[in-house]
Length: 171
Image 1 (tube, one colour):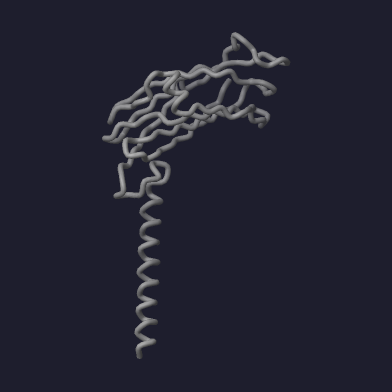
Image 2: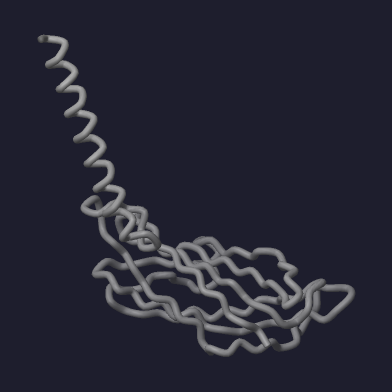
């Protein structure tokens, strides 16, 4: 009888652990893309991302770094709208151009120290918005039309990260 009691206790423990794990996974999956902080363990920072102008147009680069063809620039603004009651900071921005033939250019990243150096401040106030202007030379060994993928990551005051990706055609 003692062995049967241990088996029942073991079965009950296993069932409860599986139920808790399934519930936790189900709850966490609702927050994918918002923050790696599990619900109830920190803030849920969230933001929306807009790229302006909505139609990205290339312009010849003033100085071309490519020996075989003229590079181009695509100036745009990233507008971040903080939807949380916690202040956010821009943590990193990554760009990658893929031309219309499917060739990917190099991925370019600006981490927080580079962003602070470039903009002076990277804070986004609670429930506020902020614009960040960008312009990078693109187009070495690629066609001049394609798509620009932009990944933006923020960090909140308790260390929770949140990221968004946006892809835009360049004509």
